[in-house]
Length: 160
Image: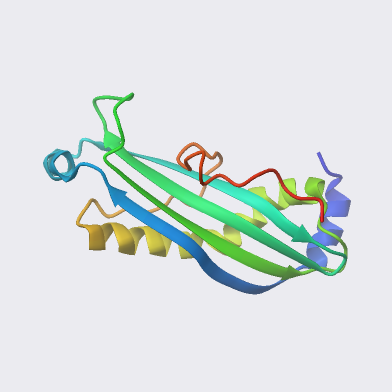
């Protein structure tokens, strides 16, 4: 765990400069059960996210963060996915000191979510409505990568 005073000092010198949608995907694997189960409110949504420190220098940090949601039947916890949506944003920051892996671990738990969840919520909601499935609203607090498929999870943070 990072010393709070070091982390607070780091935050004083951070400014988000860019945020853009890097990639997205949405798949409906079986539409029939979604239509039936939606009316009965028998669907569960599994949310997750996977942050990655892509690049860090003395004055800049680039971060990728992927948000995902799986749509499943409520009655069958081990059931196959009925639909899946994911979106990856890349965020650039100006920093006064280098964003180390230790700082990034803390940064990704709160600050990164504050910066990116509103964009992910909007994309997931809009896309789910356009797909004709239950409107999806990403919770404000998510804490694990469960809904991000292994192929989309980012590799361990780089040490650039």
